[in-house]
Image 1 (cartoon, rainbow, N blue to C red):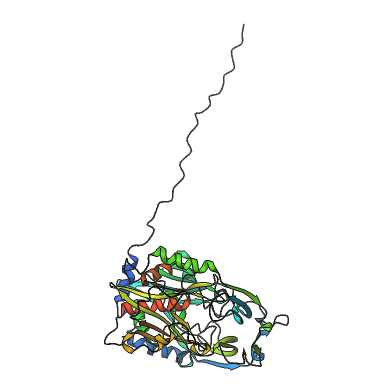
Image 2 (cartoon, helix red, strand yellow):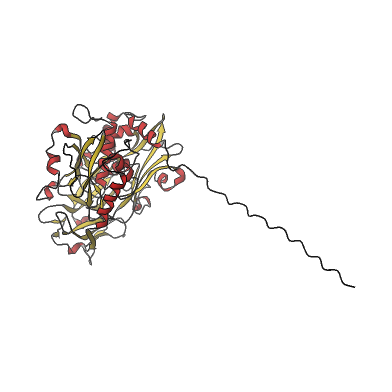
Length: 482
């Protein structure tokens, strides 16, 4: 008799795996954001300070801060020394920054082979403005901040909410913590509106970048001393005044959505970017680091590194006291330019569309060697022959000067570095444009500045000035101000 077959256990039917949770799609852009910024730009007054009172408030904060800056010889700089092997000016901690040398060669331009000092600061700093709505209008949290290199007549200027190097906000200096830094390092604390890496001065920094941010606060924000809420319209009016809005604030404000809604321009977006890319692809400027001690024409004395002819700039030392800063006293090197600079856009309007004449500008310290710069960017005394368009800018009749103000450059590294920023109308069509120059629309520049390393820091200041001019039109042949 045959034994029955053993029972075979039933095999369960295969089941389909549970579908993975999909991340929902979101709009690529906040379509309401330009209108929100436009409402803020249209608000001539805010909820905290009258525009006309802001300069007086800055003065009160300066008096409360008990600030002083004095030139000192290099041997009085605490923690700073000239390295024996290279002659570079360095800090004993290895942090902060150093002053080194660079050798540059170029196939074009007035200078084809030169060497110079540059500041090497490899840290990426944070330049951030916190914004919040009051009565339905965006307000910007600005800081009255002292910088040792600011002009002595205006040591305190309006700065971003946060203006800090990595050494600052990680407290390498053993000082107080940076106010509001958490909003820019922790995304959960706010809503990021703009965020882009931008270059600093390519003639004085070696490949330095900062993170430019505008963040909208979530929830209540405690207001500390030295801070105030201002609308974009108030800031536009203050940008018409000399040395009130500092460089770091101007570069962040330049990243705000454009007030220009033009869909036409002197050249298409593709033509503009292609022209710029071609200029950058040439890479006719080559740079390399060299020891500071080896630079020809630059000599070190007890209190300066500079040229015998006095041109360009000196490296000097200062002692600083500042009761309201994270560190209340310190010493450091600064770059002291030889004179006041001139930065200008030539402008014109065709078929109702504003144009500005940009240049493809090569600078030794830029990461990609070439960025879009102003029509004119120079210190006149450094040139035997005036650069292109400088004479036209400086001799323009008053009715052609749409904007003019003196603004300080980065006061944390440069001593009394100022430039007059100008927007000058021209009736010269300049077509075809001279080599190295191209007409562009302000709206195009606002699109490009959302991406890193397209506009240099001087062009970004002028873009902020253009936006301020759009918010506060010129009246009676003069720029309006607070």
